[in-house]
Length: 99
Image 1 (spheres, rainbow, N blue to C red):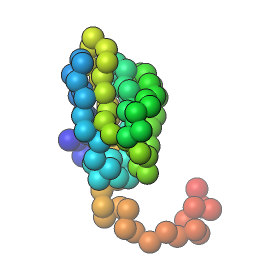
Image 2 (cartoon, one colour; image 1 turned 90 degrees about the horizontal axis):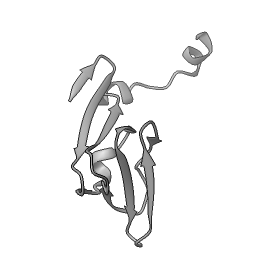
Image 3 (tube, rainbow, N blue to C red; image 1 turned 180 degrees about the vertical axis):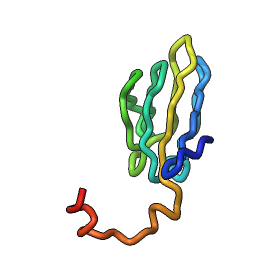
Image 4 (tube, one colour; image 1 turned 60 degrees about the vertical axis):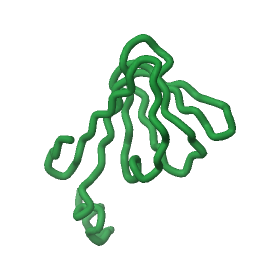
């Protein structure tokens, strides 16, 4: 994991032919980018949807079973989150208008 100031960056690798069980808590508050390879999200109902390099995902509130790599090369995901202290700061609408 990399701490880039106000953001934390994690790289997750799913091996060719592998899968990673879906745990919603692992993805809370994260924007997920498919950095390389292809990702297939397998739903708990049996359907799936594929994503490729450059796609941006939000993996919360979805009926997922697993994150799968059906390809021949590793799939690399980058999860970007803000540290908890930054997320708990009160929202100030006045600050938004100053930008």
